Length: 150
Image (cartoon, rainbow, N blue to C red; front, side, top):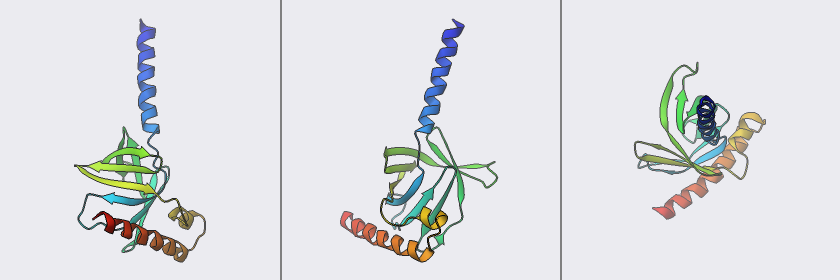
């Protein structure tokens, strides 16, 4: 009987661990759709194992921020990793799309698939000017699509 209970606990633990591992948001992203504000602006985000960076036309590159995912919930972490702030629930839509849901508001992220991206700029010695040009090109496409959906 003890073997059965241990086996069931192991299966439950494995399933819970696997569900957290499936939440993989690493990569280069842009905000495809945003219901959190009336005036949305274009932002690109690079996410690695435990940090993310974002870039917008008003602030440029923002300092890195730590994050953690626990049970499909995204938390922003303090620099020392001791405190966490609830950011929202993550839902994977497909390999190139995910959303963050908080208080009924949704931000949908799409993967940046073409051109020089933020990861190239941050870690592959590409210039800020080159990244800025690629960013603006994608931003113009995003703005045209946004106008057609209004």
